[in-house]
Length: 538
Image (tube, rainbow, N blue to C red):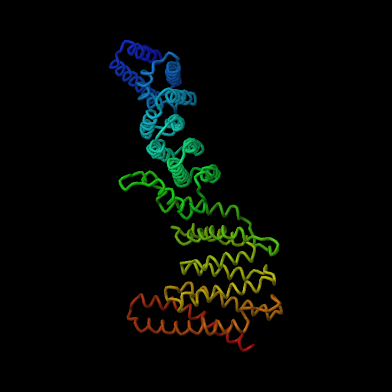
């Protein structure tokens, strides 16, 4: 037997397996299967140490022999069941030798999937996948196993969610290991991941009620995690992951996910709560990248996508009253509110800079009247003084554009007055809290100073921007700003600075507060001067 070819020895062992069952020797069957596995392992070790075309041909002959036996209509089910516990894992090692070997291994695994109990095969293939992570080439070895697993998912008849909950973490671990290979093929990895996603979706479509909802949520978590794997682990191996991620769009839609929900993290929290992870269940650890503040890399790609589609955008000059964009305004507002969260909480300066640029571009593409509606809503609902200052700066930029027609001027002036008053005279009453609200107060004063100078310059140039004149420069609004905003703020500023100087005995905190208040004091007095000059002209 020592001089026999590998394929002949495999054929003999398989024949002995069948004859042992016919004779009722099930213990002998187990011994023969073990010997067959040892034979295949020995062949694999020989191939690894002495790679050659001859050995590759031997492997092809062996795999072909196994497939012929498994495909025989006379094959005994007990033999197939016994072989199924070992051959998928052992034969998968040969998948990386050539495309022909990969094809044969896939057909062998598929044959086991067709002939054996789906629940048994789920466990067998998961164990084989776990073992493939330690192989020399996890990518090639796992391909036929993942292919078989995608078919097993569909074949399961009951307790689908429980079975998938066991298998999905193993699949994700394998995919992540593959992504870390130095020579990984991005498209090949993505195809494997997509095949599993398609199978889970097919399973979900056949279910009803609570189990269907859980499977759908599991699919959503799986899709988000493989998006993270693509974005984080292989970002340096692909020119752009966006074309690949776009193929996941149907799955996101099927799971009820939105790009807005993914950026804010609301969708992920919803999925996790639906799956209802128990305190003693470590299932949540299967999605590590989802738990890192919802994938900052995914958010980065979302922002870069916004930058791509808004490249070359110039400020919208559309002021046609017949064009009603109000239907889209709430959606735009919600999206931009999510964008502002990225600006505030992004972990690195580059992402914050890109996000701010995306915010400006999207705003520029909104028609002027609706642009101010969105900005006003963002400022009104902002809970961050720094973000409020940024948004007020964008309002200032919008005013400075000459695209506004006369019909928009009164509305624009009203918006400016509302926004400045919102900060300098908060609706909850009392003056703004200093130094906590320093950024917002400085932003509001800068906006008001700019508006005063801009309107004054327009008037001096003889430009009639509105039939009723400038709302900002009207006597009524100037007096209101002077008495209700500026003078109370001047009193507050004087008291705050005096109090900090009195308490300052070398304390860095007090000195820091004074430094925050000084720029506000400078702009405040300039606004008071401008208002007093305009009031004299009245």
